[in-house]
Image (cartoon, rainbow, N blue to C red; front, top):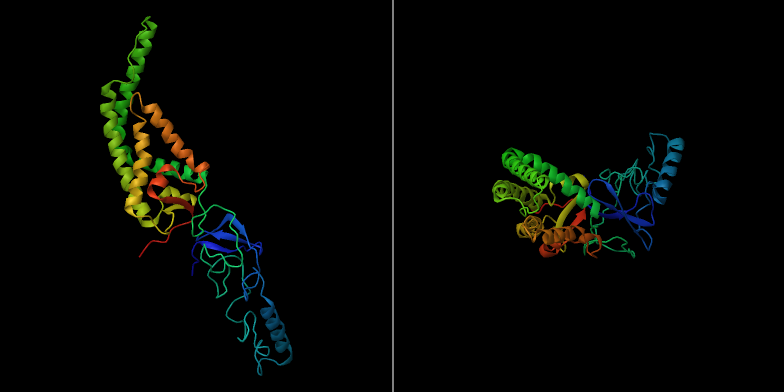
Length: 309
């Protein structure tokens, strides 16, 4: 049994909640402004009823013997649950912080993220339903990992074109150097067209494969392999789950469109600056959205997305 991603009672501090990403505890916490729900003992404790049942069971074991009452039946509270003989059905209190053992469980109590209750007051930025937003550095690391995967994955198809492009670029720079050494003062502006005729096919191939890569993974699980590696995912801001194809296409178009326009002569510097600004925008945006997130209505969040059925 696995617990869905969400806010649960912190196993190390009963006065706050901690975000469970579906597989591990994260560092995101928020305070609790009220008592824990009735009948839910603190993390790692049996609770009052379980302790009483254990004490009475031990008395029975020493006084009555196995043949009359059995091990721990006199108190009818058992070793963890009132009204059940023996060791009960809830295990040893709440256990050690891993989900899925017993009804009460060795870990977080089920409570979907976004459900406030008992005066919970979020202290981290999140989606409207309470899923924490991913930090900027995790987004950068995920982009870097995906970039490595795509570079080496597409290299067999683009390597020849890139080689020819760099060869032309190096020869052009050498010509400029030779002209300067000869005392000439007038030089051409920008690379010759011969360089771009090799660069464009490489970019088109890379762009198509990149789009298929992102579309395939994000529409199915909400995360590319790079995002999965750092524990983040993409979703619509107002709707959990993997985003639809239209939103994925919008994100991809804005992000990569700015990068491609940065390659144009003359105006490339302006678009390169805009692309950089788009990358940095989540650092100060109150919703931690880059421009491509705002266009698509998405957020990058902590934890996985449950595939839609």
